[in-house]
Image 1: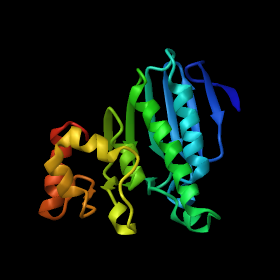
Image 2: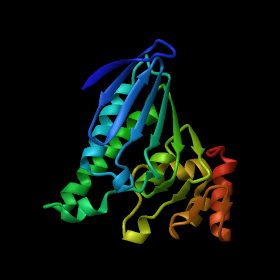
Image 3: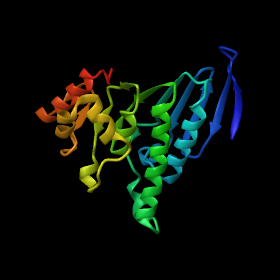
Image 4: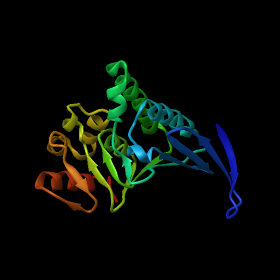
Length: 208
């Protein structure tokens, strides 16, 4: 559903597309997508990934020059919603559907002409990590943390992280960070493996 809101300050019309789990606001050439399940750590369920794919398609136009992607509340995105996965009648089919829609969204973000900025306001884990590193520019708040997380729940990486990371920071650094689920916290980093992983991200110009 698309509605127009009038801004009293700049006297501009802002287009807002209403969804259940995200928000999409368009102001001139700038679109802002917010993951909006703060009570569930912005975890990805089938509704969120489907809506994210739809929002990405709406941003893939000549009108849009910049897309800002962020999360509401304390988390950017904690990854897949494991509770919804566990209660799905057909777990494998459900997870595949969630992943397929996420990949459709990321594919659109990757090929569109607009600049994608991911503003990481808190934890980005698992698929949330993958979504974060899709950005052409990653802005990390002091409260941000990054972790692959997949190995902790016995899953292999999805969401394009296994494609993008080796090309962004090199295969060796990716191997250091991925298997151990290395966590990067704000500007301060922990063990040497995590530090090397973080330094590689920074050297590639992926965090600011």
